[in-house]
Image 1 (cartoon, rainbow, N blue to C red):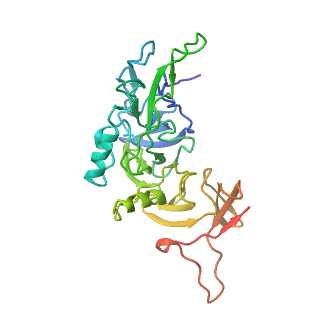
Image 2: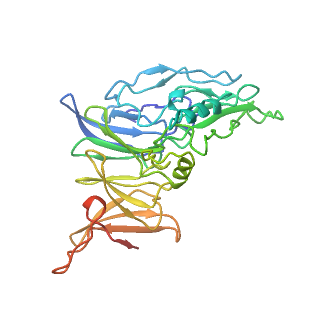
Image 3: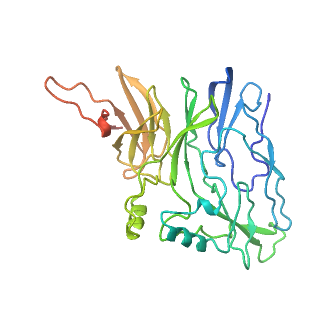
Length: 350
């Protein structure tokens, strides 16, 4: 072993690192660095020099809230990157609550009565009279997850899909007592309350974030797709028809090409393949698929024609769907065009 870096001390939030690390060469203040970027459920991007394990930007150990549960122990500090900023919501405050209208914000305030709120790494609390548990963000599924992100070796940009999905962290005394079990049992906080059928926190519920890793800054962020139909229906009942897209509560699977960022919306999104402008995040084209994305896109060339292939779910399950630019049209014919004038790609199922 040459080096290692512990990213979460005494993990009691399920903030493991299921995402594959990303290897990328960047230039920071004119200094070339062979970097490794590790995304996590915690919604941080940890950026280290992969030759020696030293942080590219400082990652100090910062004091964090401590548990009040008897016999439990929490780490006094956690490594928190100074740069780049988090790519999704961390911690929960009143400012995070839904705010399509003042009335919804007030209803959300009432909905959280009896719950504890806290910053990132807020520990689970003891559920009982006067406390329903601690609302924590990110939730068990992230942030980011196994989809990880994608890197552009030419620009030093890194892209990541994530969700805003809080959970209630609560424990209760194990009953009946059992010497073979822990004193307290987790998972006793119930579900995060909803407001008029809407998620408790402000959208976007899923997003795609672009980092400029030469600077350690967020270059842009966009919702992961349009607003899901159930959210549209809930908003329509409240007379809200002009809300911007909320994005699907799903982690997008990404791939970068020479000019585009290719993304499905993930298994919880719409069955669409998107082509984004990788510099700005503009949604250039979207193409229907026979099912929702269940794996990462990949690309290859066959007989001088470039294909993009990705797995999708649905009925029948387990399909690989391949896309390519249309073949040249016969003399006098016209090729298809996608949304925004981008070339459309016919699906070929294998």
